[in-house]
Length: 221
Image (cartoon, rainbow, N blue to C red; front, side, top):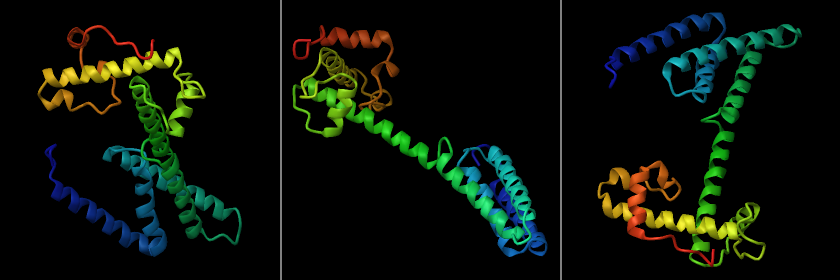
C-alpha cells in the first residue's frame, strides 16, 4: 500500500487465482496433491527471500522441480503412486529450506545466536578484566583463553589487558557521546557490541578522547 498498489485488488486477484487452480486441479490431480502443491512450495520459498517477486519464481521452481522429481521416482517402480511421492518430495524440499536457508533457516539462526553469544561473553569478560573483577562464567573463560586473552588461572595476558583497556575506553567514549549528543538517533544505536567507530566520525571520536584525557592502563598494561 505504501508503494501505491491497490492491495484490495491484488488480494482479490490472488484469491481468484487460488480458486481457479483449486477447481481445475481437483479434477486433474485430486484434493491432497492440489492442497500440498498450493501450500508447500510458497512456504518453502519464503525461507529463501523477503521479496514477493522473487518468492513467486522460487515457489514456481520448487513446485515444478518437486513435481518432476516425484513423477520420475513414481515412474521408476510400478508400486509407487505419483501423488503421494510428489507430496513427499515437496515435503523434503520444505525441510531442506527450513534448515539450510541462508537467512531464515534454522541452521543460520543457530549460527547467528552462537556468534552473538560469543560477542556478548567476550565483551563482558573484557569489561570484567578492565574492572579487575574475577571471571566466574566458564564459557567466558574458555572463550578468552582460546583467544589468548587470559591464562588458565584467569589472569589476563598482556594482550588481554590491552583489549580490556580498549573496551573500557570505548565505554567511557559512549558516556561522553551521550553527554554531547542528546538525541537518541546517535546514542540510541549503542548496544554494547557495535564499535563506536561505526557510529561516529574520527573527528568526533577525537573530541571524546580530548575530554577523556590519555588512555588509562589496566593492570599495568
